[in-house]
Picture 1: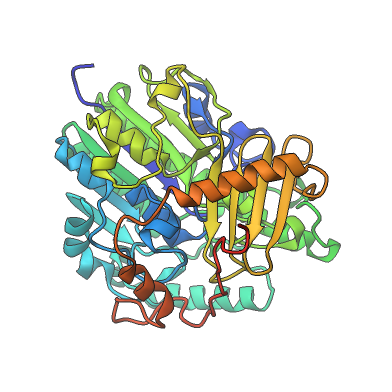
Picture 2: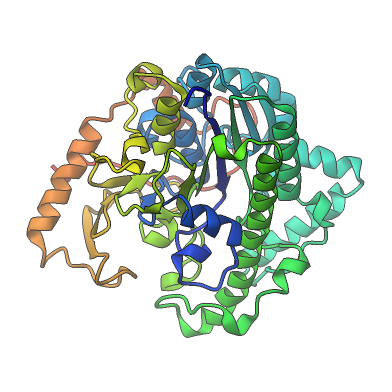
Length: 482
């Protein structure tokens, strides 16, 4: 292809792997995403590299694992001296843009005021960013400025505070938003993405970063009304007294996902109308998942698939042989994929020490070298962990108490039985592979920054941390596994 390929990365916030129509498990309506999967590459075994928002998004930006870029938890600010994937694309002549949730900083701040510095630091030519649906509790951004201009800000903050209070009390807060859809954050993300596509010539890289289906569970009523409580799934091993609670959440969760799918359809229609669809690689994924009641657990920060495994699909008529690709992949593989597609011959030159692997050869029927996907959690909310997984098995190590779990994902997809004592050879193999993965993914910069990020009480951002009141767990890494 003589013309450089445009790149569109679409992400959601907290969408678990099976909450998409093409997984064929739940009655969630995602026709536009399903069409991309049916006519492109569908990866049902993709894992986030960290099941918390900020670390995962920093990995999407840098191609590094959390223990490399230093953001292990929702705390601190990303090191501005790290090289990024958008910077590499700029060098190849791409116009780069981020529209939507960023989450590269954790302190309470005004992202709109910081936009010029942020986009220059991390390699974006165009930048319209928001903090996220719950982060506006203390942050300001493009969305909050919009709400203030419309006279909606105070009412919306009262609504958010009420939902947070209910959630802390164990009361289901899932209910329709009070906002008109035109004022909903993801509607604005969609509109600003379309504006960019209408104004931008090729080649471009656009990261459209939706905020759904993250808390609060507040879809517009027209989407929520499509889902009946009696059709909602029964969470795996959920306490009986909590089932209806989580089913109410599932209604809103699926409705928010369908809302995003509708917006994806409008973005695709824009590409087609502009004659850009045939020459645009579209990749869709999420930063992490949500337990949604499995084992009675809520939200993220767990090593189970509900939190660590995410949807991943890609579409391009020439670059991809349509099919289901069962290899274990990681969300940050987008970095190596995009950089190779853009024309750079050396990933390590662009993103030093990046473990990201390009998917381009795999999509053409070639080999993919990585056997296991990797994920980790620093320990801010729940016990820290490290894991490796492929389509057959998952190995998890918890450094707090040196406990280990091994699951047979084929025969036990819900991860209900720990077979670590029975399948010792598999456990030994995966334990050694985990040690090897950590050993070959060292931080690309001196440790002073990482020390400052994780062992002091405040980040480099002068504002207080959003999760400052949450104690961090002790993470001893793999020192006791050796």
